[in-house]
Amino acid sequence: MGVRFISLAEGVDSYLNPDSVNSIIVPITNVMNDQYCYQTSKKNRQVFDYKRRNGQYIGSFAPYGYIKDPKDKHQLIMDTNAAEIVKRVYSMLLQDLSIALYLNEHGIPSPTAYRRVKSYKVHQIEAVPEEEWVRVPDTHEAIITRSQSGKNIYYACSTYKNRSRTACSKHSIKHNRLEVAVLFAIQYQVNTAVSYSALTRNIPRW
Image (cartoon, rainbow, N blue to C red; front, side, top):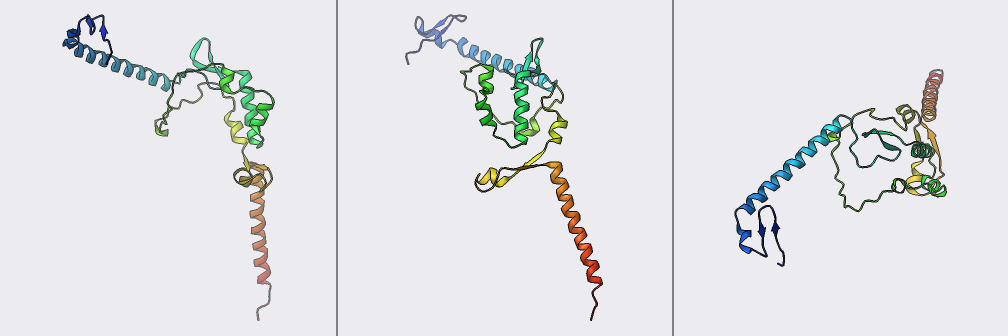
């Protein structure tokens, strides 16, 4: 096959001494090396799992809007510049505005370009079932707080978003305004029904 096998520790060289490859030490060493690699990988996974469950960040890069704390690489702190972009994008999302157009017009780089780090490795993303997710709340400061995300709920026109921009206009309504409008409509219908019942009772019966 044109392959030369050399093992310095065992003194094996398939070119200088072809018979050395048939030594019993070769398969035994291979098994031991495989077992060592397996144990090392298992211990690494255990360490990562322990760090995750203790709320330590183990990612290679901080998510957009954060940076790793210089004093503790397993802790995230807010990146003020990127965090402002995140807040702006969130605000535009609530208003159903064109986020991509805004970012392009203002020359705001993508998260990858902002990080200015290129990876030439091949990565395979594997979906993890939700029941296996590790959640540790409040490990770092939130860019969008829970109170902000809870209060700012908008409903956008699904016809405009899903069918065609010519089928309907671009509009949205805030959750609390929609709630008031629905409650008013229900009360109006109830009052109408009550008034109609009272009216029918006053109609003479023949």
